Image 1 (cartoon, one colour):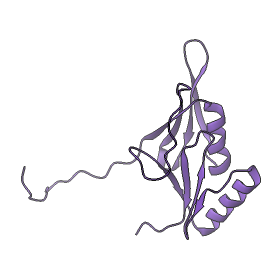
Image 2 (cartoon, rainbow, N blue to C red; image 1 turned 180 degrees about the vertical axis):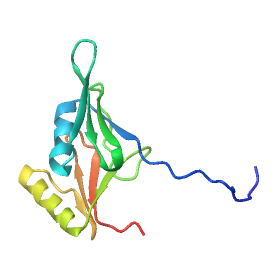
Image 3 (tube, rainbow, N blue to C red; image 1 turned 90 degrees about the vertical axis):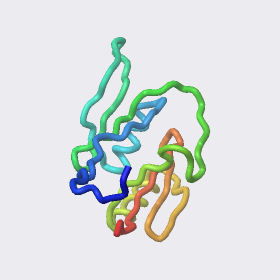
Length: 136
């Protein structure tokens, strides 16, 4: 392998989908739809007709797939952990404050807060954030 710059580097890919396991697919999908305004794109059922997943639309054509998982308990990550440990959505300061009001109105506790970001837990303890922090 050389250290020379690639004369034809690949374009950065866009996110296609994020998949989030949930014991209660309907409840978790409702959380993201309600607090973040994600619209339902489709539902998938298994061969027995049981709900297997709900796909919610994200910006840019990507989807958030809420996929049924087993009810086996798993540890709740407190901060930085292995793998994906935080799902953060973005907007401006007014959007962030509107998000805070939606949380309060729906009884969702704000777990932590910084100057730009609010942190909450979804119904299955996944850490989720709404941030107005500039990415520059």
